[in-house]
Image (cartoon, rainbow, N blue to C red; front, side, top):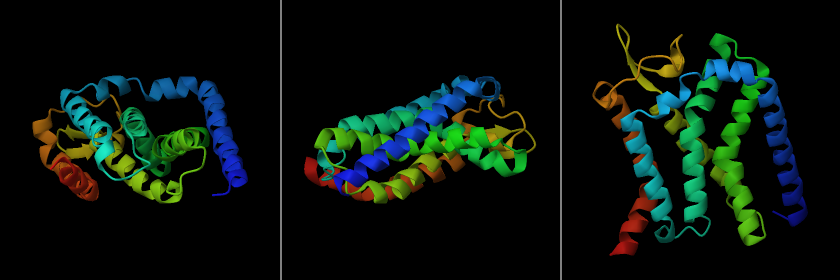
Length: 211
């Protein structure tokens, strides 16, 4: 991407992030009301363990993947942002049609999604290398797929008389009683296996490098 276009793109998405911050301040009551149990939902032991394992992989595998755009800094940053935001952002998008999510909240969720899965990566590499990464466009669907998978994984709950569902499908979103891993193990395992398969080329590259 020519530098002039890269600068224009950075200004564009930075403006969207700034607008989202302004809207978040204006919508702070609605956001707070809709996320009362959010922090607690992230502190369930199995979620912390799953995050720690994913974080360790994206940080410590970076030097061995053969991908020059992947280092421990962007790997760690994107992992952390995904863990902290994906359940909320994915949930807001999923609830928009059925639950009438207002446009400002949907906009904030989409910006948070893109910042976590794309723009943080782009911005870091631009600062590191002095040029926009060639992989920026390919990274959007790839990282978004992982972002959605994380949002779904960390939203799994077991509801009496309904079984395993995503928390954002329940009326008591984020206030639904937390579920132990045993009750959602099968669904969680399916999502985790899908993520591992998507990352398998990098996993194999790491294994080869460590031999």
